[in-house]
Length: 207
Image 1 (tube, rainbow, N blue to C red):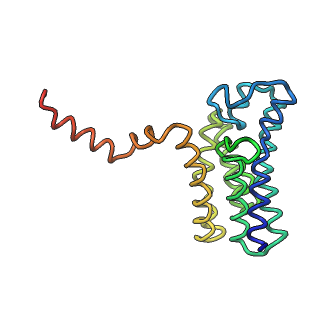
Image 2: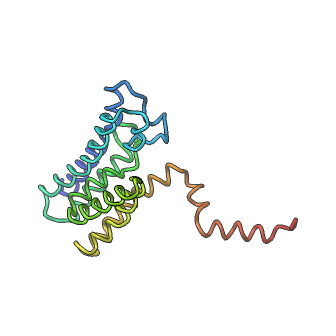
Image 3: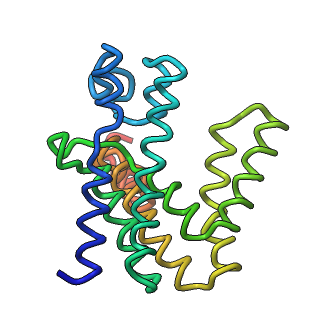
């Protein structure tokens, strides 16, 4: 088995560990797939679990990305292999083998991988998040700003190809969010759909 295939397998298996399920089982808490936004991840756990339990989910999901990339770096000096490991962990989190392929949205797993792949851009974006949070007390929008700016900071620090690879990883998150809200809702928000609706209204003979 080549090194690339090995790190993909390791990354996927690590990503497939259902951290929130383990925490819920040990705490006697509800299955996150049946409450809130039905996402078995940290954000939904905050509404159901205690603070320490949610923190365990946060750390566990983050470590999936961290460990996958660290192992890949130990086994290979090719950055492309590192990104394959990160992507495999994210796919494992989104479609976990150990949880009937019903997983989360891979945001924290991506964040963990991003910290190891490009520490300086990650630190810069984390600082922006903290500063925004301190100034506005709005953590969720601060996180969104940090996530959006990360590939641009990475482009500056590590080059366009690394930023492009990060874009590919982030597309996995996009797919998971699209699946969560439904493809019809996604398509309805596109400019083409709005144009069609406008054209239909213009052609309405009742007007």
